[in-house]
Image 1 (cartoon, helix red, strand yellow):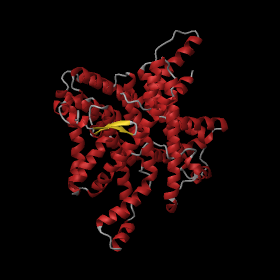
Image 2: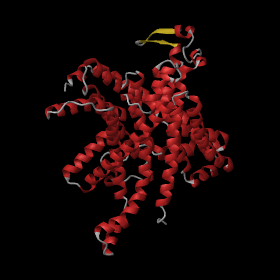
Image 3: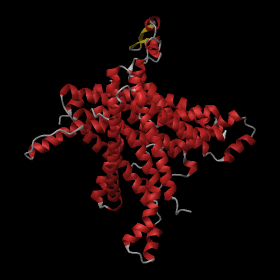
Image 4: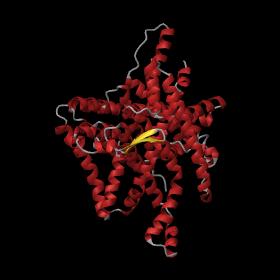
Length: 250
Length: 270
């Protein structure tokens, strides 16, 4: 039984990859290029929002841990509100509401009003949402490090920056990684929701093409397989990273 | 901004809240029914276990909105389905109705999942999704049950079935409570996808009001506020339940580490 499990662990991902490749090559009749373009947009959106989320998460964690009363309460309000509101609501609010606000500000400053693109709105909303989750991840990782480690660095006479880099950083990375992987996996799936505001990402395109060719099932299956591939690849990638970051740990 | 709109249409929002809660609760309930056998199957391995693993992997690895689309738009591609009972229940079931059940007219066909209706598609998609997530949570908890607990149960002379039902599952559910709380909130938030397939849940109401009065903030902000309230009511409920049921385990985190509204609202663990 163990053996079949092991075979399946290799065969199942290969089957997913294979099915996706086969469908893209033969199943979608002429739409391969546009689907790939959509997939690229999804990927770019996911990666860029992860960057924004990481920056916001670092800022949030820093404000919560080291900030004064004002910074701390701002960070608290940020995480509390964001984690209580669904991503779809956030995206719609930022797209439609953000458009108005941007135009108000632009007109007040004497500029021409301009359009907020669905991509920008999706980028900001997903970045802001997962920044709140990453704030907690980073904060938890920092609090998980025994204070003695900092003292030990001091006792060895290490300058603060070197102590941070050589003593704290490896430990921080190690404990952040699991939470970070979690957030990434959920974030990737969140990007699908951005199609609702008309972004021509993979989901939006597949929906549109599926409706016009009257074969929605095929195109939506392509989307599902694509997301499965993303999940499988990131899972393996993060497992490898975790393995690597465990090198020093006993 | 003019929030009189939201107050003026409080009845629409009340219906929206009802629909969101109804949808979430129903999906979580059906999801639980799916999750328990799935979790045990995964633990046991074999062919059923592999099928269960595949199901969980498929539904946790793809976005909820795509799953919903696949059911609602995708299945209509096939004539077999369009011609079947699941598309439109036969007329004699649609006509078998009770006219005055309290306030509603209820027909037999209302209880047959119809893939043509947005409501049933949402319920089916959300249930399958929630089933997969809960199965994974349960599997972890079942697997982490201390061996001695099960050995003790067997030593007391319980049969395997009794051990599973009376010891293994209850103990695992207790320990899975914090994660299950996350999943409940994840489902609540996920249910906003229903508005995309035209259902009038909280977000659907917000969109309707925005479209009707041509405003940008009011509907969405009211919806966001309602979701926020429901989320934190659920958080506090789960806190209370956890405090009660996990008292003996002594695993409460110090509040300094947990933060204000801490652990309970996090992304579901993968």
